[in-house]
Length: 138
Image (tube, rainbow, N blue to C red; front, side, top):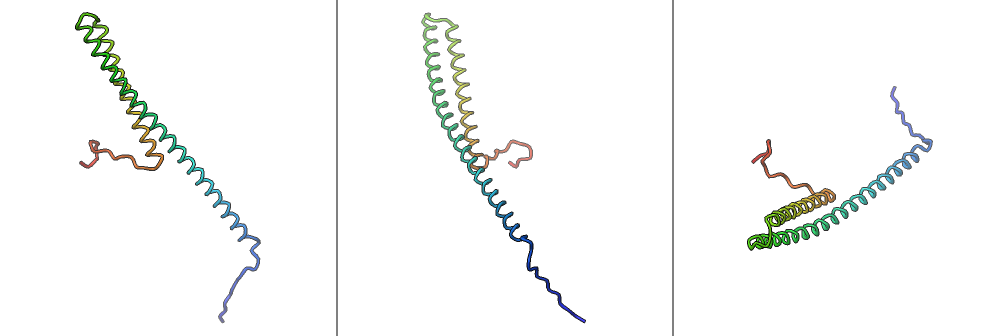
């Protein structure tokens, strides 16, 4: 005795329609999430770009401050050599020059940090270290 049994449901209780609606809702949610992520990346990119521009201006202004501090130190030294100034004037000018240089380095740091933030925002990989660490290949 042999037989074949075949089953085909004629009514699935709207199961198919429910699954389609569920997948459409999940798809819409994923699209909304993608849109949110895209907007966040645009915002982060724009902010990083603006920080770079701001840091570039700061680097320029700090470089001018260093030039002015160097000039002030030269003037203070000449005045001291001619007996018109004091050693305190020279020392004060040296301190001002050192502070201007520190501020310039800080501005360069801010610029590099802004560049790194932009690279992260747009998905660029960070530059690989060039050795010197344990486990690195020479």
